[in-house]
Image (cartoon, rainbow, N blue to C red; front, side, top):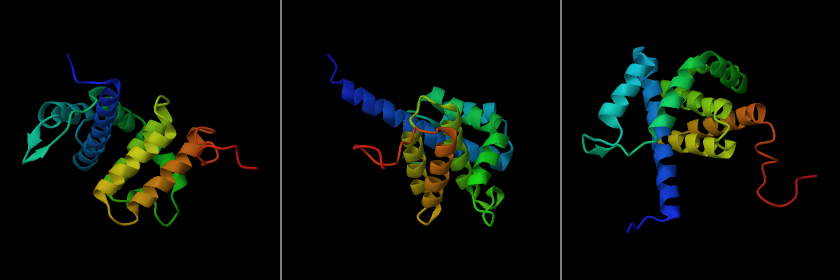
Length: 171
C-alpha cells in the first residue's frame, strides 16, 4: 500500500513543473550564450542534469514534457516573444540591455503566457517570479513581475480579473 495521497501527488507534480521551469530557464541561458541547438541542450539536460546530482547539488525530477515544450516553444517563437517583452519594457531598458538570465526568465514566462493556456496566468507569473528571486536579490524580480503582469493583461485579457482576490469586482 502506498503512503501517497492525492495531495502529495499534486504537490509532487507541482514541484516537477517548477523544476522544469527552472531547468528551461537554464537551458535557454545556455542556448543564448553558446548558440547551441535547442534539441542538443534538451538532450544534455535530460541525460546529464535533471534528476541527477552534480557537484553535490541535486537537480530535482522535472516534468520533462513541460521542460521540452518551454525550451522549444521559446526558441521557436523568440522573435514574437521579444517584441511583446520589448513593448512592456521602458525605452531606457531595452531587452538587449538586460542580463542573459533575465532575458531567459522573461522569454520563458512570456511563452507560457502566450502558448500555455492550461497554466493560469497567476501561476506562470508566480513561478517565474520565484525563479527571478533565485537568481537576483535586487530590482530584477520586480521587473519580471511587472513585465509578465503587463503581458498577461495583453495576452490573457480577463484571466487576471481586477487583481483582487475574492469579493465582488471593483466598481
